[in-house]
Image 1 (spheres, helix red, strand yellow):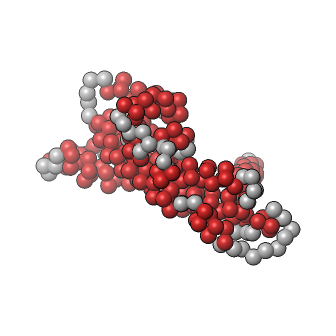
Image 2 (spheres, rainbow, N blue to C red):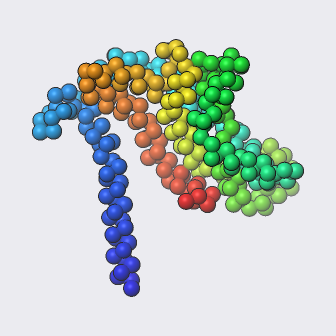
Image 3 (cartoon, one colour):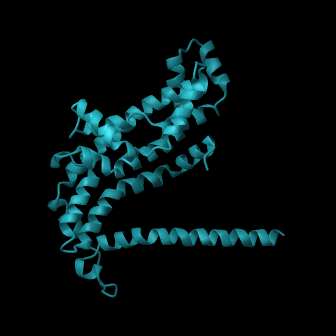
Length: 273
């Protein structure tokens, strides 16, 4: 019986590794092409030494430094405000008792079933009334509150013993102090997990910035990459396009490698599969 289970487990792991390899093929192909000359990139049998010339060409052809700065401002600004709001809302739903608590939390969960792309038109109308179109603030504002973040905070706060809060109150700690001095340090894996989700989404978001931004100097990386790739499509400069794409995705890959353990741990605690 044990031998059958071990064989089934080994077969399952083999299938998973094979699936992971299949998913990695496009990424590996892109990285390979980014470091090869144009002639070597389209010829699988050609032997060529890796080169950084493609990256130099990309950085000189488009203002990727400006694109990076805009993207970092959008991602970091949105995340910091989200951390503040999801911490307070998560604590309220996990520890406080008030009228309509369960109903409000159900509304937040219902929001998870609505993709932001469906709300682009009403969001744009609101940003236009606030005179925030064609601005980085207009891109960030609709995402300052996150239903996913509130859900993660609430679920993980419920796993922390209430005795810690009671002990803090006995020491004279205020509610504000309990949230930021007791609970916040214990929620670092949750912050890391949600931060990875938020950063990945806003780093890769294309449609909402496309609707909001008109000025070249305010474009994030996704818009800049799309314009760059479109300009190079007629010449089929795949090495340059892959080099530009590598510049865009490299920070996300590094962040995921650094925080993948916290990401998995937080979702395990919240009960998500």
